[in-house]
Length: 220
Ligand code: GTP
Image (cartoon, rainbow, N blue to C red):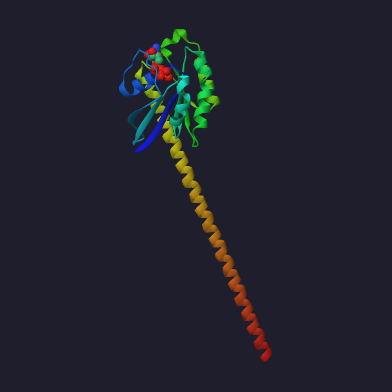
């Protein structure tokens, strides 16, 4: 079973814990208990007949945990950058979270931007288009959600996992194609070498025959 490490980051209070809690336990809690450090949750899903074990990491947005959190950001395959659509600063700070994930991962990471709390649309301070533009400019997936609404939350995790599997398959196909081409080139080279060897052998044979002919001519 393939394991995928998903990390949620973003400013304190944007709803990271609630998003995970809704996805894993189908529950929404209106009480705010700030995350201390990092928590890990597990969920299995099936994508394209493949069972995937999602390892979902909830990180604290509070400043005092930032340096410790970077340890848990390493080896992430999917990063979900969350902002609150009613809080412009949480959107402006996405770049900070993006850079932090980038700095702590050597391998390629699939990024998603999530504008959360869209049930509070009357207090909206970040337009959906702004979120979409940020995502597009940085080659990321984009979702808006409400941690109160399971469907909107499920879409994030399913959408990101599908994209991840799709990209992995493409990478695999490309690798196989390159390997096939490499082997064909090698075969071609071998053939060329064989041809050259035969030409050299024939040249030598012809030379010997000519020498023999010359000898014969000389004797008579
Ligand atoms: P830190 O742990 O401090 O980094 O915060 P967090 O990003 O994990 O936020 P958390 O999930 O704890 O949510 C903070 C507050 O926002 C809580 O009071 C939640 O009930 C509320 N909240 C989270 N998501 C939503 C949402 O989609 N809609 C509404 N209306 N409230 C939400």
